[in-house]
Image (cartoon, rainbow, N blue to C red; front, side):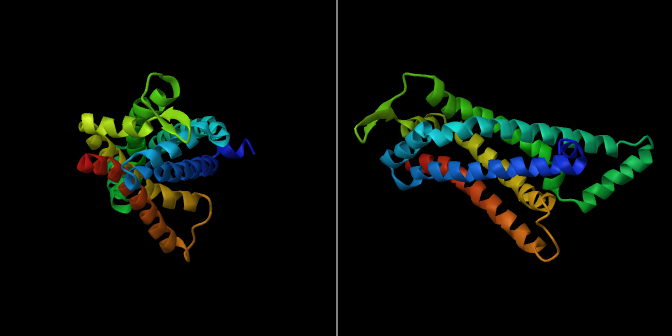
Length: 231
């Protein structure tokens, strides 16, 4: 089994599995964040954030999620380097032909998955510094009483950042667009690598991938825009 994951198809399957795991996290995370849209008092979002912060299952999943993210990026880097090495040929004319041919036969998103992934990873680092790191490891944050318990006021932390530093709204919208473009090809590619795509299901799965990418990109972009518009 270990030898299988060193093969090209094995790496792609593992990449698809880690990507699918991260996709589930993105959906859960968006569900929690969307509480901002339904309650301007912040109570609903603070309850959800506190649950995620203290739930034992989430605490177990967090390191697994981090490992999955790192593994996904490393695999993507390795596959990209290997594919690049295969495309490198000594004959310059043949190289130019292959480049033109690849441009015609593949979509922009499929040719730039690694660039989009790197952009998303950079955005994720900013997101972790802005919110997760402050809530997890830095004290002195505002608190609020919910259900007789004093909890971190995550709602104020999130909304005040967007209101005070409006440039972060642009960063988050760009990150959401990059995520949508990455998923546009990534979801369909994962189905294919896992053997779930065939002639019958190809169009359906392609549409499903498009819907998922639009839903997540629009959802993550909407939250900071909503905060700014209603502040």
